[in-house]
Image (cartoon, rainbow, N blue to C red; front, side, top):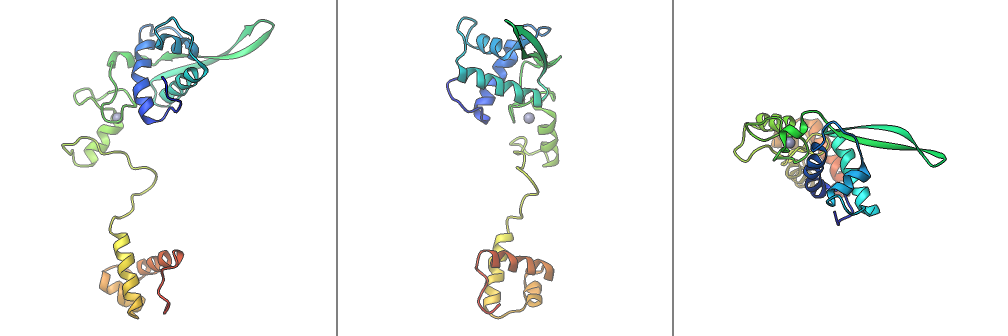
Length: 194
Ligand SMILES: [Zn+2]
């Protein structure tokens, strides 16, 4: 609980512990403060940083469907404050384990110990021995040899070759060569002759 960020590593570390804490009383609702206290062994009061980390972990767990929350108003002295309480999602503590591939979701595909999205990625990738491939971050992955062809285009342009000639040489449509030329122009690498 020492580090401030609730980045991937810290979440992977915190989440299973929160599952254990909430899983002890699967019917009860706990504030983030109470969860933080339980994480510290039940005696100490969490620091602001620890409380913030616990809250971020709980929010991410909710996105992953591991916990649910309710927010209600509670009287604190003469004022009323909003307070959010958290409960383990029914069935989650039964798994008592999280996906060993992504460490984010419960291991619902029990014979392999992975979550459904990881299991699906693994199947789509042709069931590699190494397990589920990492999810691609944002958008379609760029073809690895695109950059090679962009550089090839630059050379051919410098030799005075035309767009259609380059297209035939590389075995791509003319529109693709035009795209490569745009890429080069953006970086100021388009040969002078063009
Ligand atoms: Zn997973």
